[in-house]
Amino acid sequence: MNANKGKSFVYCTPFLDEIKRIRESCGWDRFKEPMPYTDGSKLTEFNTLLAKGECIAVTHSTFLNATDETLHAIAENDYELILDEALDVVKPFNDIQSVAASPKQSVSKADIDWLIECRHISIATDFRVSWCGGATEADFKFSEVRRLAELERLYCVNRTFLVGIYPPKVFQAFKQVYALTYYFKGYSLKSYFDMFNIKYEYASVINDDGGYKIIPYDPSIDLTFRAKCAELITVCDNDRLNPPRALSKRWFDKADESDIATLKKHIASYFSHLEPKPMAKDIGWTVFQEYQAKLKGKGYTRVRNVSKSEQIGLSTGELDRLESETSCFIACNSRATNMYRNRWALAYLINLRQNPYIKDLFVNAGVRYVEDDYSIANLLQWLCRSRLRDGLPINLYLPSARMRKLLSDFTGGVSKTI
Image (cartoon, rainbow, N blue to C red):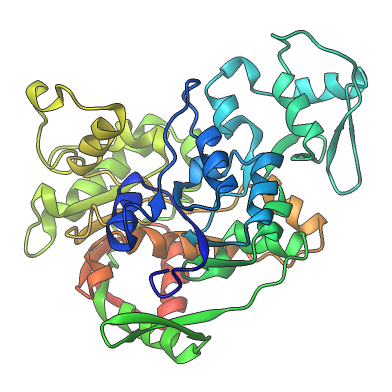
């Protein structure tokens, strides 16, 4: 971006901290950051800055709210997009920001049946939803269904599950798009590009006299990284701590109290027997978010306690960051953050699989979908929040037999310890 001062860029990142870094590196005056409008949304100013042709650093969440106005401004000003990490372009309807904020708007299978029977919606063979109903009241429960359907952003898989999809024409409006991530084929963004016939090519990045340079894809760089992972990752291979258990979301949902208690005991045992013994500040662990409270335990819950005086005057975002920095727990979908780069004693308690309806959406569109790619990509993303990203060794408790095999296959074999 610094080498192309005459171009208009949108830099899109998950984190506000990264916006600050970009503005510091590329010029506070050159790169603008959208600020909240009177309605609390940053989209209005984002669109205004786009219309002026400004270079912009923006979060994923604001970018995902793009409208036709956004699309027009992008196309008019020959923008190039740089995506910091893959964007969540396909999301369950109930997890979309505007719906999640209003539980009333969430939709069940019974709701979908009613919408179809009352002819409010129709579903095409490609699963796209069209709104067929008439005018509705302002507080209509399905107003968000109607809005997204009219924007051609809503799909219904197997008459059972609603999915919101980011409009592909936004990407097509950019002069060039760079998606900065590793193992791209494991992310929904790749399958989404395939689904909508958006062409792409792989590239590599090399260090060039202290800076970085994009070059044609070089598979040897990937092989070197995999070999380095094999050298730096030591996985627990203790049969007592790794009994047969699925550890999928369904397994957790059906697990009884004794199953959870046993897993919790195994986590504590793993950390307590590591040599050298880790302190809380060295530990990072993850599980599906709703089971964090049930599995947290002594020695691996908090790096330190936060006093009330530390919280005075902090914004919601600053409070969230403080909570993350002082917790041993690292969300399984964490990306693009250096907050945990000193952690080396890790526990990944998930056998991760793609949402089956999202998988069906891609398969129905004729996309070749490999779920193992999705699983290993997300595991690697999580592991690279730790000091592994700096080329330093880590210890890993990975109790899912499937995930251990995927990691071993990916690296060509990792070190093991009892």
